[in-house]
Image 1: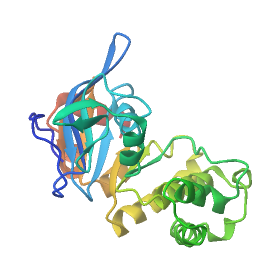
Image 2 (image 1 turned 45 degrees about the vertical axis):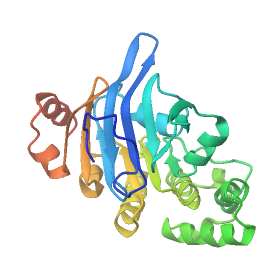
Image 3 (image 1 turned 180 degrees about the vertical axis):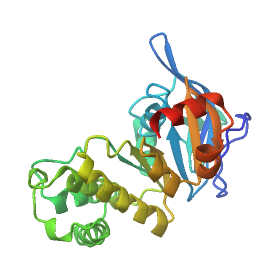
Image 4 (image 1 turned 120 degrees about the horizontal axis):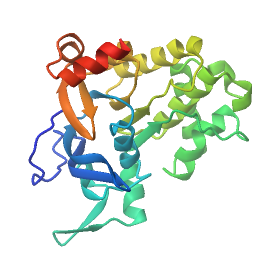
Length: 268
């Protein structure tokens, strides 16, 4: 991960970076949530974004999912521009077809589980691979069963979401995101809607995924022990900027920025 200041370097598919933000600014009215942000994430790395509420962390994930668009700057995923299309060396705002293709590389697990209430667990996981990726039903179901074993829910395959606990629903949501075989998994405060006794089970599943797969993770969380366990890099955000970045050991044990020290002392 880097927070370099050279947005003129184009994204590439040479394996050195999977996500690249170049001078990305996002405003909501008069409020600048992200301010000329540059950073990259290398393939296979686990990067956690920390900082106070309103500092821009979740906005980064929403931009990557194209739920919102930047006001300025470009975002690349695996060398492909997410927000624009290159036409004859000139960048133009991307059309929906282009955005959908690039977005296939990204999976996201939200705070709320967003499962389809009228579908059983198995179909919740197979629906998108079949209809978006064109996967055969048999292949999608085989993949779903593997993922349900990974998240510890094999015995709940024929249940509806309402028959599951919140922690179980979130684990189904994780399996559903992974079923799309994304190159990067976005995690947005995935335990914030859970009762405290259910948090540990979900975090254990994510630890297993982080340690047993090569998927890239970009995580927003207030669970600092979890961030310490799974992260290669931690980025501290404040007022739309990265004010400090480094290894978990550096950020949590010996932060250089006074604002980072204040934030961590308040929540640890």
